[in-house]
Image (tube, rainbow over all chains, first blue to last red; front, side, top):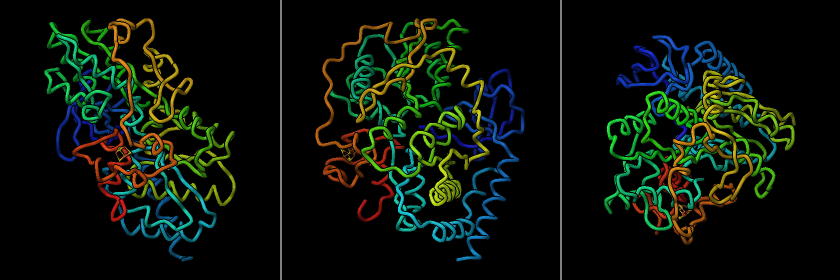
Length: 76
Length: 363
Ligand code: SF4
């Protein structure tokens, strides 16, 4: 029930708008993320954007994963 | 980037698994708190990839499963009232109460509707001014702000036929309760991703401080979970327990301030009853006096009678991490997703449902 999936913000009108998930358009509430902008990715939970996905951190985590994987492979 | 496939790369995953094997020496039991993690772990076969000294146990992180049967009975009681539309998230409908379920109430004529969002419940109230609309408000911190938002919005739109049955629950207190009971050995916790999106990482600080247990907040893709396990292993091997975030794209240490503010405005912390665990102080959410006209507990005399747990169901022990679904005599026999005996077999985050689907031979 705590499922939340990344969705791309397509339009914003007041506290509501449209997001896209896997090519499908859905209505979303931005009451919990008033600072959202069109083009952002949000985590969508039961129709509410509960946060804006942090793209910089997303890339950092991937970089970290790759570094850890490299070290793992070298020593094993 | 779409923030999904990047975290499913099998090659990276293999290397990360090798690293965990190389590094992990001490035997450790890691609890994945969240039912969503249990599903992802079983679905991706992560349990089998880990070294044999690491054991994964599921925790109580399934809002449907931890809803006390007496609270479910209240929802079923309300659904039978005339001129009432009961709205709820899908998983709640088929959970057996003491006498039937919301689904069987529907067969008997009750108007029970599954909604995807609290906004939908509010729209139903607006479109049906002659009826009373009740939302069965289960959920953890992830969902509580959306319930709060619907109440604030009902106020703003002057919708007075909308009531919430407040059954919201808080995660840090139940973790504290489990650690305090000490029934099950926990050497590390894979922390809930989306609960933490809302509350941040700080409310868990007491876990390493008071119990010496490592805590890493994880996302839900396979690489997210492997990263969290890797970080837990590091903490365990170094004997350096702390709270860390392996899901930085979704969780900030301070959480979502706006969501916390809405929760704070509408709810106050109260004691709550957890299935299989009992009453835990300050682990639930009640509606504040200021919004009491939206509180179903205040608006109705709810007399569901005596509740009784389903016979033979060991959901409670599974939620406390002391038993596995396979330990239940009814598992796969009398209890299946088509004919569930307990909530852990109904919910899309329930351990029994996860083991039934992905558990393999012995599952
Ligand atoms: S298998 Fe069914 S009866 Fe057994 S614990 Fe799980 S939900 Fe309860």
